[in-house]
Image 1 (tube, rainbow, N blue to C red):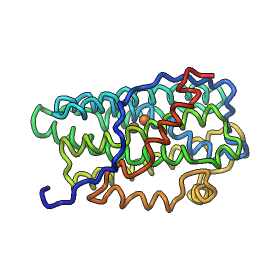
Image 2 (image 1 turned 180 degrees about the vertical axis):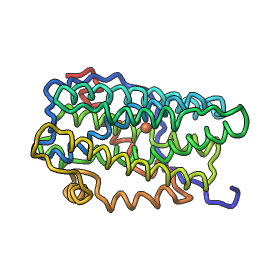
Image 3 (image 1 turned 60 degrees about the vertical axis):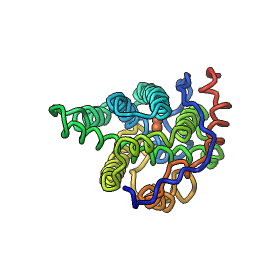
Image 4 (image 1 turned 90 degrees about the vertical axis):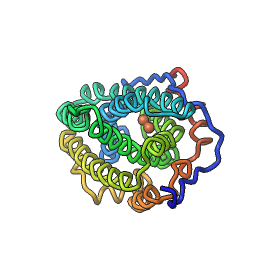
Length: 295
Ligand SMILES: [Fe+2]
Ligand SMILES: [Fe+2]
C-alpha cells in the first residue's frame, strides 16, 4: 500500500450524522406518480423493492464490523450511518403496501430480494477465523461500492429539476430527496470504513464489479416486473432504449454520466467527498417536509 496514491478527500466541514424522523403519507400518491410516464416512475420504484432488504443488510453487516474500528470518529460516523440506513429501509418499505393497494403487488419480487440479502449475502456458517473475516471484509467492500451509487443517485435526484417540471408527485419526490440528501451527507462513511479495515485495491475492484453487475441485473428485472404487472394495460414494456431516452431528457440519470462514474470509483485517488455537495444536501434536509414533521 505504501507506494500507491492515497484517496484525496475534498475539504468540507465534518458534520455529525444523525437519523432524522420522517413521516410520509401515501394516500394521495397515484401509481403513475410521474404523469404520463409510467416507465420512469417504475424504474425509480425499483428502489422500494431493493432498499428495504438491502439497507437492512448494511446495518446487519456494520454491526459486526464495529469491533474492528479503532478510530473513534469513524466509529461515531458508522453508528450515525447505521441509524440513517435503518430509517431509509423502513421508509421505502412503507411504500410497498400502497403499491399493493393500487393493484401492483410487489411481494413476488421482494421475496427474491430478501433471499438474496438474507441468505446469499448473509452470515454463512463459517468457523471463526480467516474465512469468516474474509467474508466480512468482502461485504464491507461491497457496501462501499454500492454507496458510490447511492451517493451518485442522491446527487442526481437532488438536482433532477425535470421531475418537478413534469409534475412528479411531491410526496414521492420528498422521500427520494430526503433519502438522496442523507446519502450525499454520509457518502464518505462506507468508503472510509473499507479503507480503515482493509482497503485492498484488488478487493475494491472485485467487489465493485460484483455490485455493479448485480445492481444492473436487479434494476432491469425490477423495472420489467413493475411494467409487466402494472394493472393499466397500456403502459408498454421496460427496455434499455427507454432507459437511455429517459436519461437524455433528465428524467433518469443519463447513461454517459453513469459510465463516467465507473473510472472515478476505480481511481486510486478516489474519495467520495469529491462527489456531490454536503451543503446542498444539508440545505435540502432543512427544508424537506417529510424530515421536518410532515405537512
Ligand atoms: Fe440509504
Ligand atoms: Fe447510504
